[in-house]
Image (cartoon, rainbow, N blue to C red; front, side):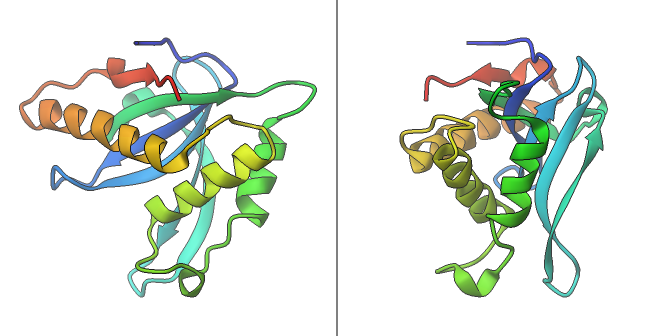
Length: 159
């Protein structure tokens, strides 16, 4: 089901890496019809990971292939600042603490678990959500590689 992003929507944002199969995973809280507040884990050339955040003109970003609503801010409960605090302090940027390979995707999945624990999003199965997001992004990426790009890759998953 397509949706029009609205201020306060908490979204999963997946960005093309240009290879058609892998993506950069981030959270995006919609500010208005053009901009959102992006929160994500990034690594530098020496594989040192850090948390970054900031405003992004998401409609103008050609690498954004999937924007999926996973929750909404609530004035009495989940503010942008509260979501930021959880992602900054509760979701560790610690590759040694993960089994297997640490990535922005593993950080994102851990973030979903923390946001669900605080009831900022409701995700009964974070791994099912991860797989659904990957399907949405892969479909959009295949279209993008054929020269078709739509911001309507936005959708709301059933959970």
